[in-house]
Length: 252
Image (cartoon, rainbow, N blue to C red; front, side, top):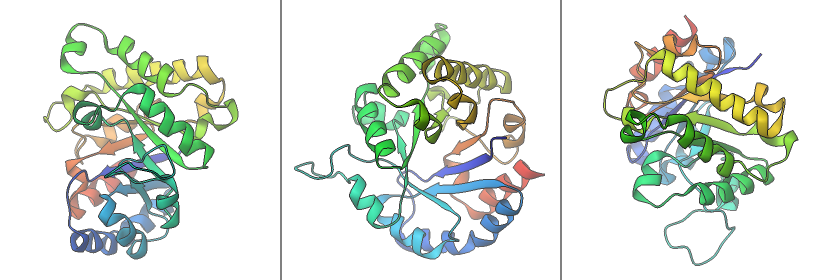
């Protein structure tokens, strides 16, 4: 039985002080979620990672929003796996559509990061999804399949279930537009099928998230779908009341 997961992506939001306040206020939410077997986490900015780790309940997943695939070197502005491990961070978002769009995050680059993270026994959250133009042309599954086959290549069968996949249709991120529950389930089932073709039974243990304008009022509908194991949430994860409501609605 796969667990449910709520992961909040804070993007470029919250000062260190604001991150600390959220972490402290979130302690009771993490405890409540744990009592019901639900995993919860947040992905702060690099500056907020250590603060959240130090002030949150120990069971809160704290994820970085990006990482480099090299341990060190002349990569200005980057952060490495050893740096994250040094402060106890073991989850990383890879290939978010905003990084693909603004920072030349290719499928090949994502693969290098995923292989590195899995080798270091860390958890990559690999984002896949199509643009509005691709969606309207009926190319969703073709685009997602390529992202999966390139991004997940060269992994071992035994470790594939350590990877989390997040399906985020680009046209629904921050737009207020939602993929229907039926569309989300269809694509997430397709994702599980591709991973099954590539790596076998590990696909049945892999967590697959949906992301794209997820809010307290619609999160439960998505998570009743058999192949959607959780949500990667942006704006709705920034306010503690909204975050709490999503956990409560997911469980209730």
